[in-house]
Amino acid sequence: MEALLNEWLWQEEYWLPAGMHWQDIRMKEDEGRFPLPRDLIYTLPLAFAFIALRYVFERLIAIPLSKCLGVKDRIRIRAASIPKLETFYKQNSRQPSQSEVVSLGKQCGLSQRKIQTWFRHRRNQDRPSNTKKFCEASWRFVFYLVAFTGGLGSLINTPWFWDDSECWRGYPKQPVAEAHHWYYILEMGFYVSLLLCVSVDVKRKDFKEQVIHHIATIFLIGFSYCANFVRVGTLVMLVHDSSDFLLESAKMLHYAGWTRTCDSLFVIFALVFLVTRLVVLPGRVLYSTLVVSLEFFGPFPGYYFFNTLLLVLQALHIFWAYLILRMVCKFVFLGKVERDERSDEESEVDDEEEEEEPEEGDECSWEQRKGAINSKLASLANNCVLNNLTNQRNINSRLPKAR
Image (cartoon, rainbow, N blue to C red; front, side, top):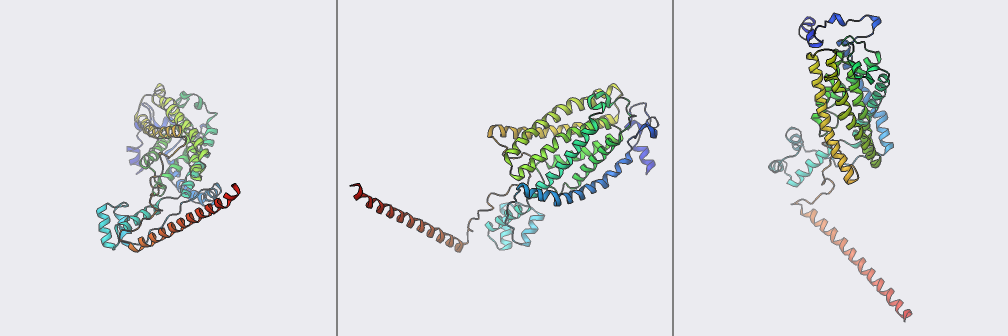
């Protein structure tokens, strides 16, 4: 297997510029660490460690914090246990058509209205609570904040943080600092954990785009580490982390009902996102990888693959920037952020959940409600008559004094 990988996967012309060989980039112990593919093996157990840590964090920290901030969950009616409807709900559709409603009604001996009500309650029952969404946002907020702080601290004194050409000077024989090595390993492990948990996390409208983003990010981090694009890769990760923790903090405040603070923080996030993802990333990082790098070496397959992944991420940034600008327009013209354009796909509760109308064939229920309404109307009428009589007596008693 190792010989096969060396023959097909680790060919020098794929990973190194023309004229370079693996022995040319070997480093001695005193020269520093050179990134090796086997280092990425640690990301898989690290991903499972992140998942376990997240489980502990959500229960010991996130849930108590949500209660302190006033996060409230909507009380939802649980659907009755009806095996035939449950089977149809899981295997066929969550929103049956009219003909399917008629067929299910005949099978279960229920009216169409009851079938529709059952499916509405069942859909609402599966929708994530605000507490669950708060816990997810708080976990990502903590990681992105720590990653951005640590990444900025490790990069601010490096020459390539200020000068793009330093990312490629001496490439590919560039030693990697221990801090940048772990920056890479932790970031990749975290995104692997997000990809493993994507099926159980809150499903959003941009679910497919999020999956593509996670996969592209994992490939980008892994490939850039193996090809020793570490210097420019650290800049890419820092740019992403700079706005991500702002977004997650805005979500936390939104679920807690802190509307004004959330809206203000969202505006700050929008500005940071648009500047970093649409100006800094393409203007500095993409320009450096596409143009500046060619001043030091000629294009090779690794160069094209790395830039392709960066362009995929940039396309996703443009898509999300469009959604954010829509929200900013709503904020400017309506005075508030009415709805998250990336909101949870299954988070909106059906409008009719709390208001149950009478069944078409349920005459007893209708008669009872009609009797209750008539009695309330009669009581209201009596009160109105009594008030009029009282007012009339008061007026009559005052007339002699006025005379």
